[in-house]
Amino acid sequence: MRKTFLLEQCYRLIVANAEETEELKENNVYGEYMLLHDKGHEILLEEFVRKIKKEKQYFDVKTIKTTLRKIIEQHNAIINLIDIKYNYFTRDEKATDYDNEIYFISDGTICIARTLIEILNKNTYIKKL
Image (cartoon, rainbow, N blue to C red):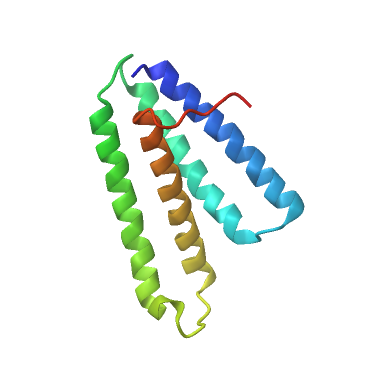
């Protein structure tokens, strides 16, 4: 896979994410949680673009997918810890603002990592907006 192709896909994801975030801010439909979810997208995408820019023109897709899977595992572990801390939210406990922030940023990170893996697998293509 060419570096330029993957970077273009990432830039399109960044634009789509920014537009979605702006729309969420205007409409305030899903509240703060979706904004935190989108922040998770933004954090991983910025980090991912920096990493890809350092790569050669062609790079090992398998290694990058492995790295993304490890990120998914790490963030799933974070979400599980918060779920356990609040007994899977079965007692209608309200999580702290900090735990909510970590939870939904991790959720967004997992979401965009899966999207990137789908792009690397050539199962997903982000069209021009």
